[in-house]
Length: 337
Length: 299
Image (cartoon, rainbow over all chains, first blue to last red; front, side, top):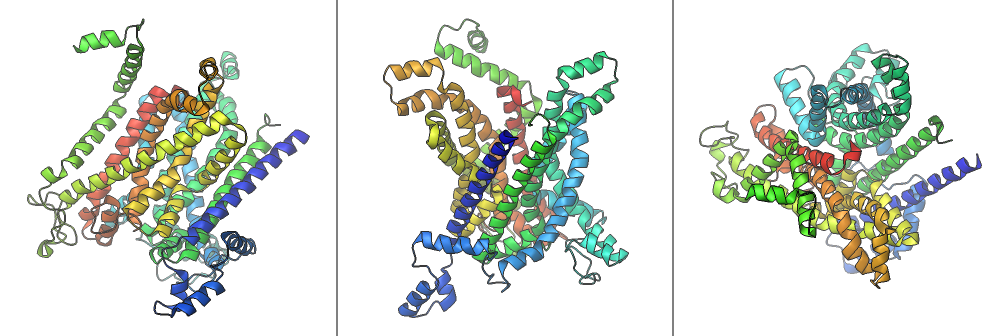
């Protein structure tokens, strides 16, 4: 127990150091901004003494350490500054836009797992066969194409060509604003409101972006499942199970896969984190009102507080998911004990 | 001539270092040649490099010349892939765009590989607090999603190709450092390093002359695998308006503009999409094949 507590404390310590590093990097990015915040505040033609006074008032004359201290104490109090564009605090903007991203990424993760894990298992069992090759090529193709290209091609085929899905956007305009926001996740909110029309509309709009993100992230899941399974299938307990006369798939699913499942938890957590990144780009193609859209709009306009804030939040989520993977691994893998 | 080389390279009893080295390279090549996907990838990359280098000779039109009367035209004999929103020839722009993409890849690799090699070998060789500090910094950079970090860097530096290269490089070095460190740890305590140290070689000389060269093969695989993701990141930055700026015929930027006409003039977006698809796929095929050959553990 003591040993476990110790190693967990070490993990937690390294997470804290990583978060500190994250805050330093985002602080530095916020410091080297292309738009001079002082001139932006007082105007280009302000006299020199006004500029100097504003500079001092904004704390930009203080030593970097002092500036970092005030930055980090604000962040820890949940203050990421204000957006010039939306005139809202960045924190409330992020809270507003995040559910749309979360909804898309979560559904994509579920779909990618449902497709990727079985594909990986089949590829491992039929190693070297044509099936294995096909799965491999399909996965490489999904992963090696920029997700915005996939998204555009998807729009071309399923929207322009086949007219199977609605175009960009999260809702049809007749449902826009009809469902009261509770969780921000439209599928849940529309069910809570009992509005099945809005539910199916939201699901219809989600279909293509989710499919594309799932395909994009499937490659990693499939590859890792295949690698873990190949490893597990080499084990002596597999040989002994086969020797006892168990059929092929019983051995695969009953004996090999449970050993792999634990390792897959880490993979899924990492995939989830990667999906956030994919979602940022997918959103710009689908005019999806999520965190990615918020970030890119801020980027285009040199609105640095949202850029730094969103980067910090996504980075923190990334670290958090890694920690979660680590914890789950410890909880579920008997060998770690 | 070739048969001689083959016999010489595959000789089990190599008599010189050079012969052994070429034997190893030739065996890698043979294994790679047996992998059809890797060969397809290599051929496509080769073709793309040639096309990009010869763009001024091959392009049927000047990529910058506008022809507003003939904008968003469908593919014709005159314009094989049609024209864009300013009437510029898309094929010519694609050819010139290939130069930008390949240039970015080369620039990033040249910046990143030595940095990763240096950080990794120094951390691995010295160990202790040097190792801890360097690896912590590496972990912090790895803790970020790469594209988001690159976006934030470019935003801070002001959009453009140079910033994009710098931003991609800043986000791409940590895996190289990790690999170089792992390789260094496996050789650090071996006898030949001890022997060199005993002859009085300095730590820096050992790292530079004896440790670093051993890390290179793993780094080469990583670089090949990474090229696809460098291309993707560069194109994504261009697509988001943070990389190469119009009128530059960078593929991502071309797609960003063409996105506006996707409902009616879909062919304008399709060809740069296919170009990116083809090139990044080719790099992935080759990288995958190389990994199978050089690092069978991964399979």
